Image (cartoon, rainbow, N blue to C red; front, side, top):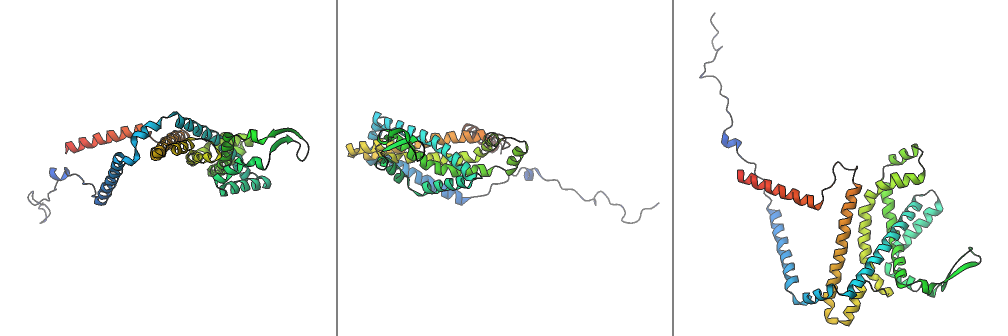
Length: 326
């Protein structure tokens, strides 16, 4: 049988399939050019270099006197006082904040009103006013007593003997810190999903057990970063206890500055560096506490600084190998 015309194609007339050439497949995708980023980076580096050069070469900073004062016993004693006041105030402030937060969330209108009034009052009054008021508290109440309300007193205390400089500083900072910590704790508790409360109640667990074992551990994920900010602010707020005659780090610097007026700048630099060290240590502790409470809430824990450095080094080596292969 003869085939109809045009039914078959010769090999010469058959369509050809073009395969990509080696030069096309070996081409590499070029990254997007970002000239603005490079310009801003260069400007920032120039500014940082100028600041570092000024700090290193300006004789006004007197770095030799800075080295002399940095580890002097007088300033180290003030640093110890700062750490003590911060530690006591942080613990008492957090405990008071938890109680105030529970009062704000309770079903009692009296507790809600008292907690709200306390928070409103101490968030409105400056800390220096609170410290000075407590420092002169003995002028209002010379004695304190324990006994039956509106009745006879069983034990009486001399307020002037109890209210030492350290006591006044810790109480003043704790009262102020509790007002801010209460809002941090209350926000953390409210951030816990309502289903967790309902599940705990459905199991018939006591209220105290629900809070300590279910609600509060989950709330700590939200409380920790916010309260650490408060703690950093508390470290810096301890500089105000100098006004109630307590020689903390800043008070020691002020005292030495009045005795050696030519060393005021290096003394202030010493205080600045110590405050930077303290806040940096708190920030490192914050990272590991947040990482601990992130277990079970995220698919993978955030990498530590050492792990980030290792990953960055491995990525840099891999990039060098790719560049060498091309």
